[in-house]
Image (cartoon, rainbow, N blue to C red; front, side, top):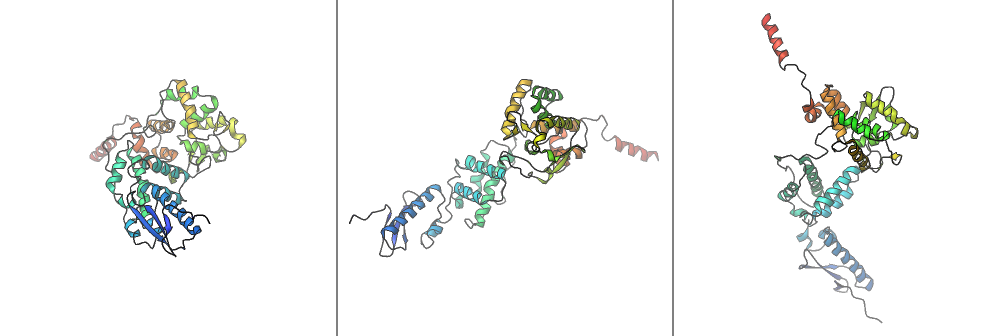
Length: 387
């Protein structure tokens, strides 16, 4: 008979048990656990496979000592040692209810901001508010972007409490202090186009794309709303269109519901928007579904970047200073304000929750009416005195 095969870190401890050996929680600390199995060749191999999986879990940071060796007297010494990065990944995988766009955003935070940081290999039990706060404040982003990224960890730590991995969420009730300097992104910065610039852009664009841009300039619709618009949502008699679904990059061509209740709305198509839409019928109406198509492929826009690529070319040709395509929305709202349109109507067209949101962003575009403010109060007082 040949020699019995041996396995590194695995050996018979008695007639009814096998011992396995592995380094944890660091390379200098060795643990020995006993598995109640007869040390037959087959069982020794099974234990070797098991300890190999244990070593892999330790390396990846998701090793749970007490779950793997529940009867071990040492297990309680190493509870809650799962790393934040690996817990975030596994926890996200369990969230079947969240939308695809949210899932992609969370994944980007986990892989882009957490993975390479000092938080990545910090055990859940060692996470503190100062650690997370310093991680968040080191980002050169808008405060709301920073808060959104922080929310990914905050929510996961809530789940860790429910999973009984930690007793208290260290982020509970904690908020970042307001920053004195606010850096606006190219999307949130309101930098509208003038009437001259708008006409130059539409004129410089190929006919099909130009009609789409005209529609965007005169509706203020978001890019995902434009991509999600279908002909069956257009009321040609009432000259309106229903916004009840969108297509985002994350949804990969599939329809999704708008993110907010206010975004569900019916918008009135002002003259230029309705005219552009009627002219666009020749390109897609007979296909019967998506209104706006990529002129280069004749198919629905596959990503927002495809729109942006043609947008860049058109602005360059028109000789107009570059701004992101989202500025078509800001242009619509700001020029509606400047024209003196009813604020409630503007809020409804934009899909804002209330007038306050509209005024928060666009009040500075309201033109001076020439009326002396307070004059009506003075007139009322004069009428009282004249009695």
